[in-house]
Image 1 (cartoon, helix red, strand yellow):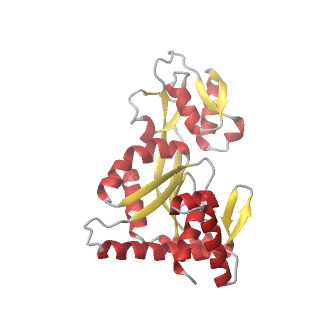
Image 2: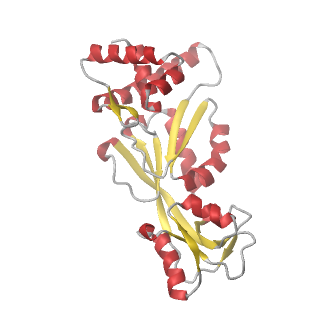
Image 3: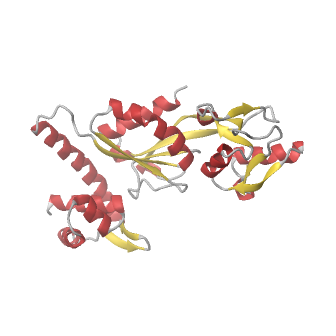
Amino acid sequence: MNWNDLRYLLAVAQTGGLKGAARLVGVDKTTVSRRLRALEQSLSQPVVEKSATGLILTEFGRSLMRHAEVMQAEVQAIRAQANADPVMCLGTVRVTSVPLVVNHILLPNLPDLLSRSAGLRVELISEARDLSLLQGEADIALRLARPSEGGQGILARKVGDLDYGAYVGPNAPEDAPWLNYDRRMQYLTHAAALASASETTGERAFAASFNDAETLYQALLAGYGKTLLPRIIGSADERLREVPFPFTRLPSREIWVLVRRELRELERIRVTVDWIDRMFRL
């Protein structure tokens, strides 16, 4: 087996296709395809397969990729030492969460991580769906509930709670209506609390509802009404004003960090998880 071929496997895992992998590695897609075939022939097993969106790793390919990432990190460390570069290249870490968390918690705090971790590159992946760590879609995930995925392949730990408060947007009227989620979202505690606020108190609800927290946040900033937000977000935005909530008890959601087990000892993973801990250490 040509160990160099593993970098093409990693590139496909990160980009999901030949074209993106070729761009990432700096070759043409024919070369990527040829090297993947050579890798499969040397191992006598397929490592990639076609999907509706491009290429994905087979189960064997995913297990191989986890070892390849560790090898890649070691090679990067050796190269850094050989070049006598005082700034070690930590590599790239891919962190995913829902858009509201990425845009208004992770992104504003990103300078803290980068200032403490010279040589680290960060990919913030904003996705409403839960990306699969086991399939290599991300390295670290932040979830707003106790996770159910992964089994022994994933390390999961609660890092804090997101306490909610009621906020009104700029220039909203005194009798600002409640900005609610779509009824299908009421399995979420804060969405159910919002629905109850307007239904039980008789206060107006805005004529439109939303199925995404980021969209609801933008409606709040547009001055359409008032809603519930995590206090870590609402209190940091000077354009918003906290207002009373009809019920004594405000909702709260757990926040969990997930890491692929075999990556936990990599320096780039450790420094990023430490950064996440600092953000939610109240």
